[in-house]
Image 1 (cartoon, rainbow, N blue to C red):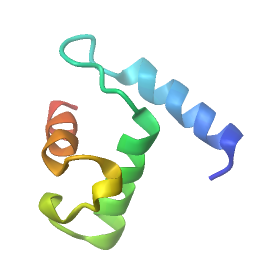
Image 2 (image 1 turned 30 degrees about the vertical axis):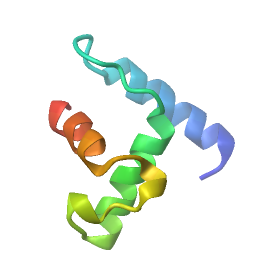
Image 3 (image 1 turned 90 degrees about the horizontal axis):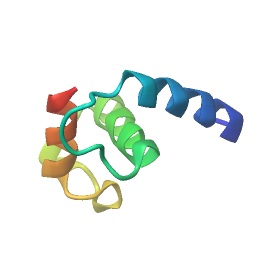
Image 4 (image 1 turned 180 degrees about the vertical axis):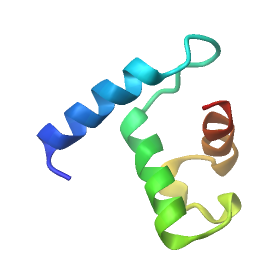
Length: 64
């Protein structure tokens, strides 16, 4: 995706985000982790370290 595309996606994502709990630190990295997870059809534990700790990504996904 191009940078302008990412900016639009992140705006929409932030608008739809829950007002409760931890807000997360890097929305783009989180969305890239979700993309990787679905495209590669892997388990949460198999997420590469570049996306952060798998359990943090999973918890944020679960809260959505």
